[in-house]
Amino acid sequence: MPSASSAEEQLLTANSNMKSRWSIIEKAERSHRRVPGLRKIPLPALAIISFIALINILVWVAVGIVLWLTHSIYMHRFLASTAALAYTLGLRHALDADHISAIDLMTRRLLATGQKAVTVGTFFSLGHSTIVIITSIVVAATAAAVSDKFDKYGSIGGIIGSSVSSAFLILLGIMNGYILYKLILQMKKVLHDKNRGEEMWKIEGGGILFSILKGMFKIIDRPWKMYPLGVLFGLGFDTSSEIALLGISSVQASKGTSIWLILILPILFTAGMCLIDTIDGALMLSLYVQPAAHFLDSKSQPSAEISTAPIPQETPEPQSTPVEEPVSRNPRDPVAFLYYSIVLTSLTVVVAIVIGVIQLLTLLLNALKPHGKFWDGVQVAGDYYDVIGGAICGLFIIFGGISVLVYPQWRRWAGKNQDSAPSCGYHARAQADEETRIDGLDVAATNTQSIYQEGGNLVDRPKTGTAADTKLV
Image (cartoon, rainbow, N blue to C red; front, top):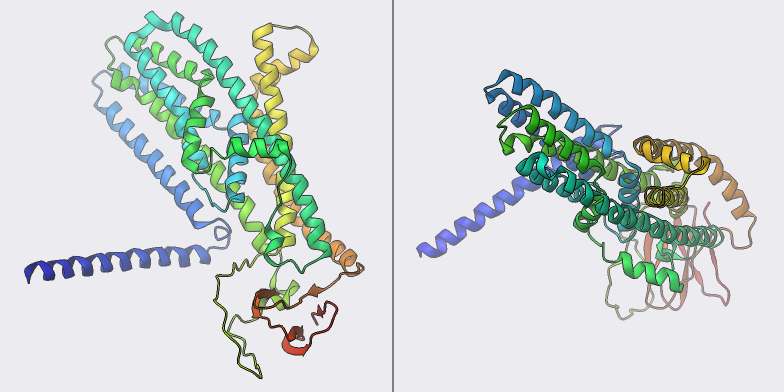
């Protein structure tokens, strides 16, 4: 039948397209693993950075074509310099402290929920840029006639935007402070008792305050939900006023300039800010994810590299086969993961609360106009917000590098203390009809035997009344 043959052809075409797509992805993954420096950065992070960088190049190509087609040489030179300034303002504003803090904290939160979100910074900057574009359209359409009224609205928007961003950062800092407390408790448990399986990776919650904050921040459970948050942050109108000023200057300096030419400015601003915010979010994800997997080399944990082939088990009597449930296999070392999480979470807590307090004090300074050396310092901090943001990026890199260098010595020190503890070693007590993890191996346990691992071999011993130790030789 013709319909059946056409359906088969469509199915074959879809399968071939799917295979070719997977082959491209596999080739990209193989190439990614071969590059020593880039393989520690997740491939999705590199992909989103490359994609946004390509968009930036295309935007500049389009702007160049538009400027080349502009008839007036004077207008061409004026818009070229103004376009470069708008792009630079976008790059600079992406380094503002509130951007860095919000993106880093939400990347940390989404990662804790199991999402490797590489587009947190992208959606945040797009939401922030929406206000810039709308503002520029209004100003370019009405020119200088509404500039005074717009400045009044900008002051109201500044109060709203600063209040939202400062409250968000302070609350998120408090929540991460609680997470830091639970991470420290979890580290103590892992160092003193390794017979916890997947429980090593769980952080227990509790407390009224944390429940309230957790309910609030559950709203942002996907990267795209950073877009409305970026819109709220953009109501500060600090950068929108800059772009509006550029738009008014363009209209006044070049009579009859089309609104579409004026829109070059906010588009370039958006491209620059989106590039830096995307890089920040993607690289911050890499900082959180990768070091835990690469802290320990294979020499420091020989038993963790045991073959994952099926383990033959001799049972004298046949037993009923229980229904197999998927078991989560996490190859990472929980101690390394918790160590690095504590380092970065400590830094994010300090940064979030400090930046939130600075924003709140700046808001009070602009509203109440107080005087004194303290408020002069607040004014200076507000004037150099971009410098503070760049310093935050540097602090993450510096402390991340220091933590990597310090980790081997700290691990040896923790190992000595752990060996002297009563519950040293890897404990494994088989429970009835359940899966027990032993050094990354899922071994089926029975009611009548305990499984030991000695010298890399699995042996059976009679079950005793006390918990048996699985010793690593």
